Structures are given as structure tokens and as C-alpha cells.
Length: 89
Image 1 (tube, rainbow, N blue to C red):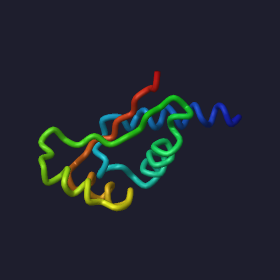
Image 2 (image 1 turned 90 degrees about the vertical axis):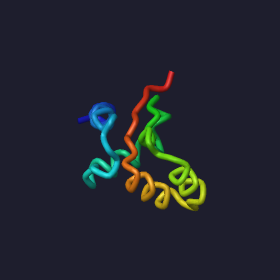
Image 3 (image 1 turned 90 degrees about the horizontal axis):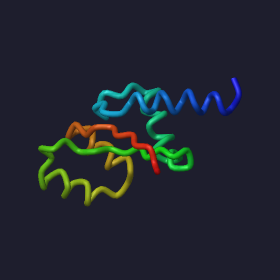
């Protein structure tokens, strides 16, 4: 496979993570999520976490107090946040 074909395959895989509960991602899926969260925009994808609608002020306070991406991810796992994948226009 060429680099372009591998990228296209990875983009399809990360798009399949859309609407998944972050805490349920398997290690290879998590690695793919993290890669596209960092680098997705250069491939016209915006990959992020969206809190559940019922996430209240406690969630936002904890997230604001987090000092690293790892801490933020732990909070998102605890509150059941959803993976979102959007195309960038």
C-alpha cells in the first residue's frame, strides 16, 4: 500500500469512531483517535471529544482544572464523553 492508501484507510477507520463512547475505545482505536486529534486538521478532519448532554457544572469545573491532556481524557472517560469526527471545510 502507498502512504496515500494507508492514510485513506486510517481516515475511514477514524471516521468509524464517530459517536463512540470514548471510554470504550480499544488501544488501537485510542491510538488512532489520538493521532488524528493531533494531526487531523492537516487532513481536513477535526477529531474531538463531546461531553454527554447531562454533563453539568462539575464536569466543566474538573475539565477547567485539568493541567494535561491525560487528565482531560480521564475526565471525559469518567463522564462518558463521545468521540466526534468532523470534516473541516
